Length: 252
Ligand code: NDP
Ligand code: 8X3
Image 1 (tube, rainbow, N blue to C red):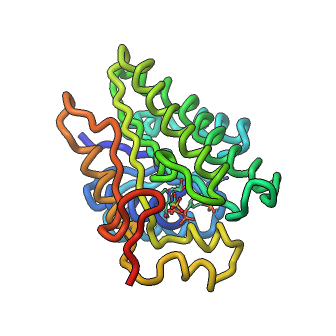
Image 2 (cartoon, rainbow, N blue to C red; image 1 turned 60 degrees about the horizontal axis):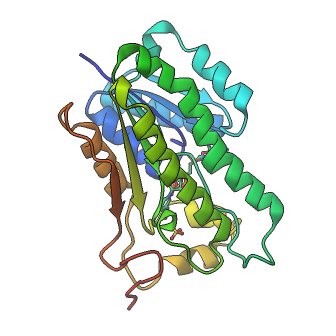
Image 3 (tube, rainbow, N blue to C red; image 1 turned 120 degrees about the vertical axis):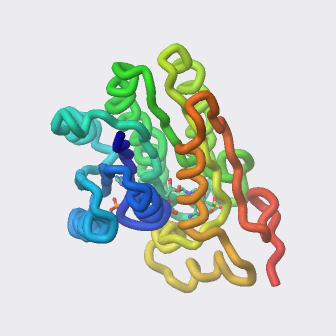
């Protein structure tokens, strides 16, 4: 039977690569993001390349009302969601605690923590009703250790780590698996967004080593989603070979 995956933040990076990976395996895809035009282009590409059904949903995960009405308004056949991937997220700024911008902090908390919770609260009841499902949350190596000037970004990802643990415990009786994937440095739009379009600063993040690519993380998410029903990867940290933890890199 055809399965359905819902991926938040599918307009670029990990989310877009995951959408391609799951669509290639014939999953029907619900893809979300704020940039409607790009989302539609991704949807068209998935349909054309893989012949699957794709439903693009434009909403901001920070907007509680928009999240719930988007999920509630799904046509009945799209409410059978096998895999939810809470991927939408961002870092804004890399400034020390005393210099960092409070608005950036608000946006990271509202997106990475509250947004993930809103989408989960809207989708998980659909899984509970079917007594099956998998939720994959995107954390980060930044969830496991902080780094200088990582402050609130690291805190939001530590929250994702703990929320994932809590969901796993609470959803146990409902037979819902919860997997947290914690990637290290990956060359997506992440650093461009973090440094607000400063391409030099963004490029410097990836200089001197080969970072993870979006496809690496997509392959891992797909692996986690296709394990036998009795097997669940709970917590997975993945870095490129040149990175050992949140702060240790070997750059040439
Ligand atoms: P990208 O910037 O390439 O993609 C981020 C995605 O999130 C976009 O599709 C964006 O869509 C979406 N998004 C951001 N804010 C919102 C919002 N408020 N509402 C809805 N969608 C939103 O970055 P990555 O692919 O790298 O990041 C994906 C996830 O992986 C994030 O949670 C990030 O923290 C995490 N991560 C990234 C790492 C890296 O080094 N790249 C490493 C570890 C974790 P749109 O702009 O259209 O709304
Ligand atoms: C993204 C990776 O190292 O910028 O979560 O925190 S890092």
